[in-house]
Length: 309
Ligand code: HSE
Image 1: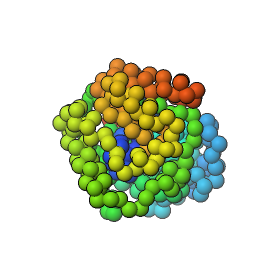
Image 2 (image 1 turned 30 degrees about the horizontal axis):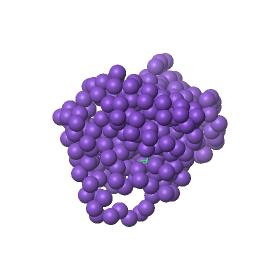
Image 3 (image 1 turned 120 degrees about the vertical axis):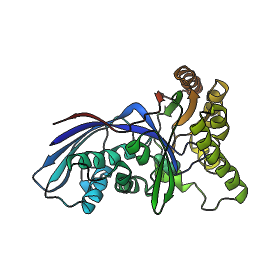
Image 4 (image 1 turned 45 degrees about the horizontal axis):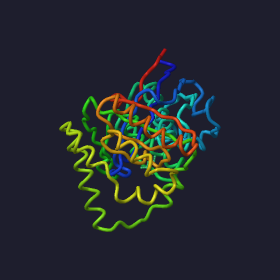
C-alpha cells in the first residue's frame, strides 16, 4: 500500500465530569487526510485546505505526531501528509486531535500496522502537546479507538474502551468564536477542594456505570462538572442558557465540549438530540451569535478508511 485516504472524526472530551480522562467519538463531523509513502525519508506536510496552519513538520500537530511515531519505528521510507480541515481550530471538538490521530493512523497503516490503535495514542498526544501545551489523550483516544474512552491512567498509559447504549446521541453547538485550549486551561486551578473531588469521582463512576447498563437517567444525573465548568463557563457566551435549553428540552445532560466554546448535550435517540440542538440554537439566535450544530450517534469505529492503493 502506498496511499491511504481516511476520515478523521471530531470528538467530545471531558463529558462534564471526566476532565482529561473521558472522551467520545462523533460520526460524520471530521477532517479528511491523505498519507503517501515515499522513498524520500522524513515527514512532509504537502497540502492543507480549510485552515491556515503551519506547513513546517515540526510546527504542525500532524507532523509532530508523525515524527514521534517514527522515532519508535525506524524506516527508510518517508511520508507526505495532506490535511483537509473541516473541524475548526479552537472549536472544542478535537480539531488538533483529529490531525494528530490521523497522521499516526495513516503512517501506521502504510507501515503494515506495527502498532495497535491504543499504542498510537501516545504518539498522537505529542501533537496535542504542541497544539495546546498539554499532552492530554481524551480526544485522540476516542478518535483512534472509536466509541467512548476512559484514560484510567496517564503513567503508564491505560485506556479503557467503554460500551455505550446504541440510542445514545450527542448534540453539539459551536458558537463561531475561537477559544484556544491553552487559554481555556489557563483559568483552571491546580488544587481541588476535597468536597468537589468527591462529587466529581462519584459522577465519573456513575457515568461509566450508566453507559454500561444503558441507564439513561443515571447518565443524565452524572453529567455534572463541579471542578472545571464553573471556571470555564465564563469564557462561553450564554453557556448556562444554552445548557439549560438543552436539558429543559429533553437532553439527559449537557456541558462544555472539551475546552469549549462548543457545548454538547447527550440525548436518548436522534430525534431528542435534534430537538436539543435546535433549542440550543434558539438561545444563540437570540444573542445574535452565529453557530453550527451537529447531531451525531456515537461513532464506534473512530477513523475510517475511505480508499487505499
Ligand atoms: N481535556 C482537554 C481540556 C480537552 O479540557 O482542556 C481539550 O480538547
